[in-house]
Image (cartoon, rainbow, N blue to C red; front, side):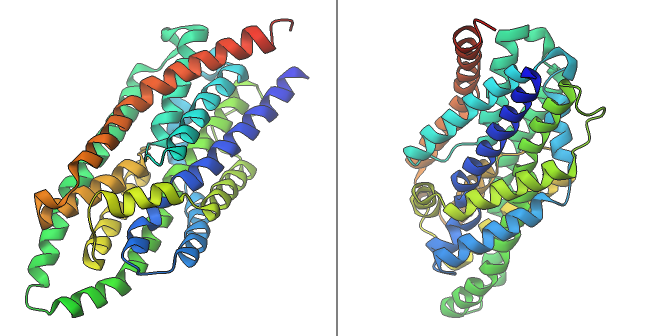
Length: 334
C-alpha cells in the first residue's frame, strides 16, 4: 500500500514540476515576441500553452533518455529517491522564478535526481555514460545556439541590406508570430518529456510497468500540466529574457526564435534533453552579438551563466537534503 501511495506522490510532484516548468519557462517561447510587440502578451501565452501541449504529445525519445540514462537500473532506486529529486528541483525552480532569474528546469531535475541517488544508494548507482551524454547535450546546446544565432542574424542582415528598415521590421514582426509558434511547439516537445521520463522510471522501479515505455495517460497528464503552467505565465523571467539581455527589434526576435526552435527540435529528434532557457538565452546573445558585441548586456548574461553553473550542484545538494529529511524525519517510524 505504501508503494502505491509513493507512486501517487511521484506523479503529483512530477506534474507540479511540469506546471512550474510551464510558467517558469513561458519566457522561452514568448519573451522575444512580447518585447518586440509582435503579439499581445495574453494571446501569446494562450497560443504557447496550446502549442506546448501539442509538442509534448509527439515523441517519447527524450523521456526514455531521462528515465534510462540517469541510473544504471530502475531496480536500484525507489519512489522515495525520485520524490526527493523532484522536491529539490521544484524548490530551486521556485527560488529562481521568485527572483526573476532564468535557470534551467532540466538542470534542476538532473541535479536533484543525482543528489538523491548519490546520498541514498551511492554514486555507483548512477549511469556515468548516460549522465555524461545528458551533460554534453545541456552544455553544448546553448553554445550551438550562440554560434548559429550569430550566423543566422548576419545572413538576415545581408539579405535585408537593400530594404528599408521599416519594411524589414514590419515583415519580421509578422514572421515572428510563426517563429514564436515553432519555438512554443519545440519547447513542449522537449521539456514536457522530462517529467514523463521520471514518472515512467518510478512506475518501472515500482513494478507497475515492465518496460521503459511511456504510458499514454502519463503523456496526457504531463502535456496538460505544462500547458496549464504556461497559461499562468512567468512575467519576471519574461522581462529578463525579453529586454535585459539585448534590446531587440522584430528582426532580432524572429532570428532568435527561429534559431531556438531549430536547435531544440533537432535535440528532440536526437532524443537529447536540452535546456530551453539556455538555448533561448544563447540565441539572443548570438543575435545581439551579430548586431554589435557591446549591444549585449554581458553583465546580465554573466549572472545568467552563473545560475546555469550553480543549478546542478545546488539542486544535487537540495535533492540529497530532501532525501535525508523525508527518510529520517517523516519516514523514521516506517
